Structures are given as C-alpha cells and as structure tokens.
Length: 241
Image (cartoon, rainbow, N blue to C red; front, side):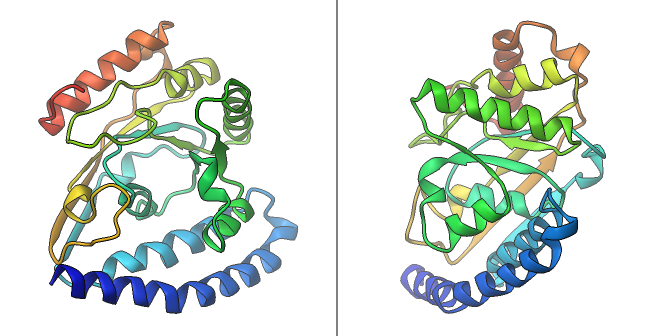
C-alpha cells in the first residue's frame, strides 16, 4: 500500500502542479497591482497546496487553535519533523511569510511560486544570508505581516528536538511582537525526512498555543529559546536532541 499511495499522490502532484502554477500566475497578475504583500497569492497557495493532503482519505489531519494567531505582526514558530511540515502549516489558512532554505527557491514551479509570494530564503551556514533573512523578517513585521520560522533550522533523523536557534526570539523581542508557538505531531507518520515514500495512513495534529508577549520573553534570546524548547519537549513528549 505504501508504494501504491506514493505513486498515486506523486502522479496527482505531477499532473496538477503545472495547472496550479498557471492559475497561480493568473492570481499573481490580477492581484499584484493592488497587493504588494502578495496576500491574495499566499491565500491561493495555502488552499491549493493543502488540498494535496486531502488526496488520501486515511490521512487524518486536524488543526486546532487558529483563532489564537493574532491579527497583524507576530512570529510563528513550530517544531520541525519532515518535509510535510510546511504543507501542514499552510493549512493554518493565515497570512505569513515563512523562512525556507534557499535551495527550495531554485526548484522549478515550486521555487518560482515561492519567489512570487515573496517568502524569505536562507542559505544555511552563510552569515550574510542570515543577516539578510533577519532584515527581511524585520521588514515584513514592520508591514504588519507575520513570519513563520522553524527554530530547529532542520529536522533530526529521529524524534528528538534539535536545539532552538535564537533568531525567532530576537525578532519577536526586538520588533516587540507576540511569539506564537505551534506544535506539530505526526508528520513523520506521513513521510520520513525528504521522502519519497508516503504512508497509507497517518494522524497529524497541529496545536496553536497561546501567544507569548515580547516582555515575557525577556532580553536573553538564547535563554528564551532554551525555555521554549523545553516547553515543546514537555508538550510533545519528546526527548532533547
């Protein structure tokens, strides 16, 4: 069943992805003159992309607490388990710009759409790219646009939480905006790492936690990151990496 489900989903993706992209180009062309933040395009991407997670009836996906995401600027953070995490987070159906590794922006169609939507890229291990990423996030927050960051940076090969990098916490504290923790559980049951094999059954849960105000974070971003990692570990039942 794993091979049948994988073949079915990837074939559906390959056949429909060009159509999704062409419609996205039309959405972009029609909305760009009055929508510099690409909010309309992002809303389209969320719904079009998340629909792939509805292709298999035995994939059980539930998202709770969307209403806790504040209106306006905030920093969203989520634990990182697999390549499916970004797809699941699109199911929040909320406006944000997510930070992603630069290599994804170089992919045909997927990367082109990410660039059109003005998501934020990061070249891992390059300090100049990190500086540019932070500057872009500050700029989006100043425009009232939330940003989404996976503070682990990547996902581990087992279920352990990796150390949380301090960037998201620096952003929230310096920009004086709420930080919203989001717990993801079960995406490794859908796909391990970068795939390609997909499970015929999975149970994915996403829980949006109450926002943490910037004054609650304190000025020590490293300490705030460590505390938040402990909180994620407790609520997910995950050991430390």
